[in-house]
Image 1 (tube, rainbow, N blue to C red):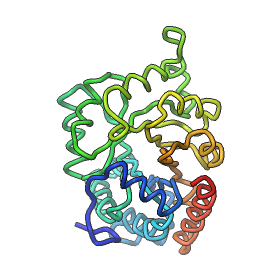
Image 2 (cartoon, helix red, strand yellow):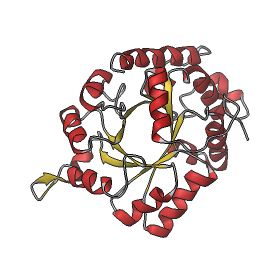
Image 3 (cartoon, rainbow, N blue to C red):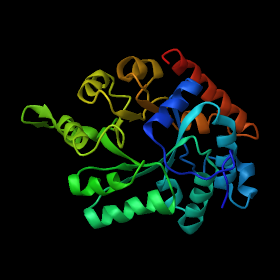
Image 4 (cartoon, rainbow, N blue to C red):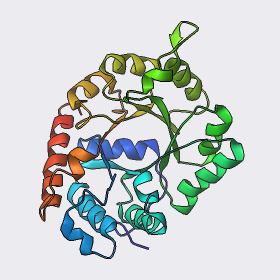
Length: 278
């Protein structure tokens, strides 16, 4: 099993440790390792494990600026067993003091959710996993039973289809408001985060008012049109309280033998923009 850049494997992470990383690096950058074999530099395809070779170079180049890495499991599951092996090697290589997210969007009835939680908290030892809350409390609760692990629950997303359900009025209020408030009552700001899409600019401050103490995982910055300034102005709390995810804008900043240097430059620029608010 690969070790991280710090020589240790991943484990559990308390809120205070995340906050400490944010203050040390003056960054809330989460780098999304949505690694697609059709998009990585062609010279890496000669490697025994091209996905891990790419991820290792990206991690080495960006860990100075990143406080989190998010592995979108779909890009690994699609490769079958080899993909899961690449995921495991990648996770083990991430420095222990950097928060890890399994972006798997799981959620099912109790026994099944327990197995999903074991997958990502015990077998692969992520710090957190994203959860779809549509089936209610008994689909989320099993994830919250693991000490110093986090459930990151879909709150309000930035995709076009979010309008199909999330904004429907229920008792005069958008459904996503009910979801945020109800889910928040199932745990604490020490074990629940929410996914809040950055492209819903008009809702960012409002969502923060509904959940003043929780961390938000915020996708949609960069390629999807969101920006760091708007997110920081409307969502930061006393602990920072946000992880701004950038995937394509960092990992595919370059596409030749200098791709890692390009990724470092992109991550550095995002960190510079974030540091103004930290």
